[in-house]
Length: 125
Image (cartoon, rainbow, N blue to C red; front, side, top):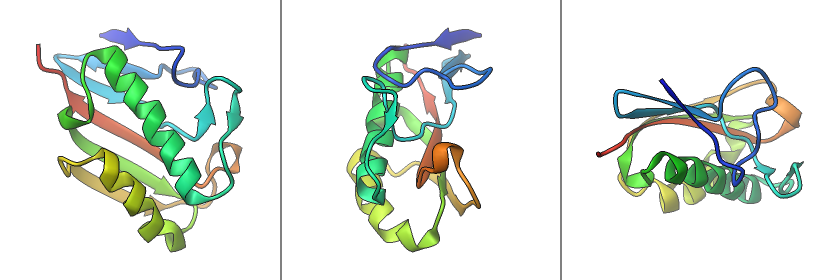
């Protein structure tokens, strides 16, 4: 196992890693819309928060030596399914390869954010 860490994404706020690589697969922890420069939540709407989440994931993917084209599976957590359509508009800009996905509504997310996304990606070596 190889731990992945970049200062360009938020630090873990608990006892976990930003991501782990095992056998050329990257497994990320869930990313929430924390701006790594300020350690504060970016925005109060789903579009702004989803953009920050995708930018954070992009930095973790880059640190691991891959990008969104290597993503094979995502799990998306929304605090309100009413945000589903707006979330998808942001999501489809980044995940153009259309990986497998689960998207669920949850009661509460850390720091009361609106969205969290985790992913699995293949790293080509």
